[in-house]
Structure formats: structure tokens, C-alpha cells
Image (cartoon, rainbow, N blue to C red; front, side, top):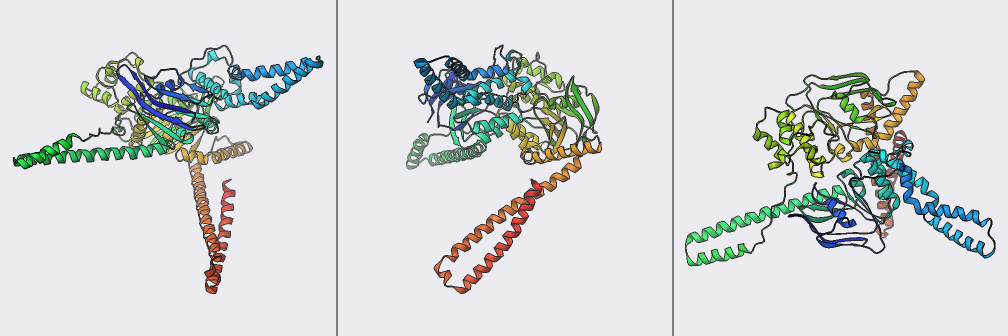
Length: 638
């Protein structure tokens, strides 16, 4: 055990955030702390690292073990470049390297005992330098920087010129390079693109230390963690497994709790009815029996009603009218900012009922695309056509559609003047804004609260075409699940940008990857995209080569051709899987027959031996056919 939290409690005024939280972390274990916004996750991390004092309980770290902590928000102040800032983490190695080089020069002119002392020091330092991976620290720094999404031209940028998200990535890089025994990460994926998140997953999975993560990225948690610590209404529960395993077990626990509560309530009502009936008989014996039952009932430890799943926020998305079949048509779209060419020759067709996710690395132009479609930015070239009866509802990750000086109440009333005061208050209450909360100014709200206001406006819009830019940013996991359910039940059309892979997996019917200044199309969710990404990239590369040869100007295969190709590849994948399963079954059957041939009663039975021989021949022939089929399919899919 490398870390132990024992009965940790913390209150802020009369608000008890943590109540006797206990759990432990083993060497090399990867664990997550989950809970809704305000559950105390960040507070618990700060208590573990000593930034906050617990009211009760203790944190015990194994002797000699080091902690490293990444908070959600970083405010680095430095005149160093990004590369120099990460080099400072390796300052002990840099100083050691300089001392080794200095000794090499000095030894040229030393003699006798002085030379022997220098040689001894030189040998010792070299051994330590090699043991601490001194010969690879420079390439390690570059690998971490590139893994976190920095290009080589970024390495020379000064820290003071970076955005908050870029400073967080630099701080994360410094933490990873320092290699503490226990890493604590608070929302580490917030400022990373999909490739950087995938890199971080691999890095943490292979990290030779313990990791504790607070994150709303469920796909990330599924990949990395093997233990989940849940904070719920101040109490802590520990679950083994990844996030999906925790979610399933939590649902089972909640169902069992609700069943126990309902059964107890039913028994209490039954006993109360029996007591009332006994008393109504008005006989001494009946009254005594009633009194006895009352005493037993008074001793019952009454269970509290479990909180309902997804009762934190109420979101229902309904279009006011049905749009035409063709919702959006984009032809030859292009956009640049100076020398920064985002995309060109982009074609896109979106049909009614589709839920299309746009993905790609940071800076490729995903948000710009949505703003152009929503007429918030002009395109450099191309044409955008909305279909018949299309009514757009827009969700902006920067919440520019919200007016910062207005109160929540005024924001909804001014946008939808037809709503009466009661309706506005009811809508805001459905998004957890009650009482005087409705008179708070938008500028005073947190990111998650602004997100809920934007969702409330979206719900009231009754739009049939939703355009969403990072809709899950700042939402807790429960709110994300509510949004997922609402979108899956929605009968309109959705186009959204997101880096939340779990959210994409649950909601997308199609994925458009913005890469190489154009789109690649995938007819499926995120898991399907991962399965087909390499194939599509190779197809696109081959298409580009053929275009150069023929001189054609088209940027990619048309949508129908891609769909047909993907269907063929999907069938081959299924056939390959079936062949593998049949091979495994027949090999096991053949092994079973071999074991039978060793049994004395079979050896002495000529008829049974002949039967087994024929069965083995049939299996061998079938296996030979399956092996050939498998090789053919594997070759075609490679």
C-alpha cells in the first residue's frame, strides 16, 4: 500500500462536503475519483497533497514516496520557453552532465592522487547518470511535448504568451517528467485533443507508479483505471474495475437499495394497518398485541430513500416542426486565417435524423466550421444550403450566445418573451437554478452553470437542427448521461464538435474527421471510427496519389462510394471473426478427440477408433479450408 485515506471529513461552514471517506491505493494502481460537480473530488485531492487540511481523519503516504499534483487551472509565470521550462525538470541531470564534461577537461591536466580522485568521481557520476536515463532525457522531453500536442515550432514560445489551456499542458508535461511515485490529476484531458488524450492513456497505463485521476472523460477512465472511488452526498464507496464496470455495479447497488427501501416501506405500511385493525377490535388482548407490534415498529432502522438516477437535471429536446430530408448541403467550402489554411474543397451532406460528430486535432477548424454554418463567420469560398423548414439551435462552447451582464431570468425572458414568469422559473429549476439563483448574473456563473443555461435555451428553442460545439465541456458525468439520452431520443438532426469519445460513442451515427484540410467520412460511432481509421487514411492517401497522376481536382471519394467500401470491409471483418471462432471451436474439438484416443476403453474398441479417425479427418479438412479463408481475409484487410 502506497497511500491510505482514513475517515477523511471536510466541511465548509454548514456544508459537509466529505464524510469519513476511506480508501487506499496500492503500488502502480490506477484509480479514479468520480462524482457530480460539487461532490468534493478536487477538495479530496487537495487534502491528499496537503493544500487543504481535513477536519477529521488522516492521509498516510508510504515512507519515502513522492506526490505530484496537477490542478485544473494553471497560472505559470515564466520568461522561459516551453522547451526550457520542461528542461528545468531535468536540472539535476543537466548539472550532472555538465560536471561530467568538466571533469573530462580537468582530467587531461591532472596527475597522481588528484587524477585518481577525479576518476573515482567521474566513474560514480557516469554510473548515476546512466542509471537515471541521462542519455535519453532530451528525447524524453521532446516525446512528452509532442505527445501533449505541441509542434516543434511551439517549443520556442515563451510561457508568458500561452493560453490557460497551453499552460496546463506544460504543467502536465513537467509533472510527467518529474516521475513522482503517486500522480494526482484533476481533469487532465480538458485541454487535450483526441490524439494527445490517446497518448496520455498509453503513458499512464505504462507508468511505473500509482495514479489517481479526477476526470469526466469516461472513455479515458475506461482505458486507464482499475479502481473507482465514488463520492456521493458526502459519502465514499469503492468499486473495483474501470468506469463501465463501476457504472454497472452502481446501477445494481442502487436497484438493490431501492428494492430494500420499497420492501421496508411496504412492511411498515402493512404493520401500521395491522396495528390499526387490532386496536379497532377494542379487546384487551388485541390492544396488547397492537402495542407489541408498535414497539417492534419503533425499533426498525428506517432506510433513507436512495437518490434517483439522473434526477439532477431535466432535459427534453423536441423539434417544433419536421424539416425536409436534406438538412444541410455544403459544397467546396474553404477557410483560412492569413497563412493558416484550415480547410478547402469541403463537401458535406447531412440528412434528417442523423447525429454527426465532427472530430479532429486542435486547430484544424472544427469550431470555425460550425460558426460558418451558423453565419457567425464568413467563408472564403463555397456554398452552404439549408434544407426546407430547417430551424437551427446553436450551443456555443464559449457561451458567446449568452449575455454576460444579464441575469439568468432576463436571459430566458428576453430570448423567449412569450414565456410567463412561472414557466421561466420552472425551466430554470429543471436545470438546478432555484430561488434567488435565477437573479445571478451570467458572468458570475461557473463554466458548468453557463453550460446548463445554454442547454435550457436550447431546449426552449424547439429547433429541428442542433449545432453543438463541445456540449459536454464542464458538465459532470450525470449531466452528460442526461444529454446523451436527450439526443438519442431527439427526432431532429444533430451536428456537433466534441472530443468526448464516450459521448461520441453513445450518440453519433456518423463521424466526420477533419484532417489534411478535408473530411474523411465514417458511418458509425467512435469504436467503428477506431476500427476503420487506418483503412480510410490509406484509401484517402491512395486516392490523392491517383489524383496527382490523373490531374483530377476532387479532394476525396464521394459519400456513397465510401459507404459501399466501408460496408464491404465491415463484412470482411465479420467473416474473419467468424472464421477465427470456428477455427478455435474445431481445434478444441480435435484436442478432445486426441484425449479420447488415450483412454484404455477407446483403444480397445475398434469401432470407436474408426469413428474418431473419421471425425478427425473431417475436422482436418474443414480446418484447412478455414485456415485458407482466414489468410485470404487477413490479407485483404491488411
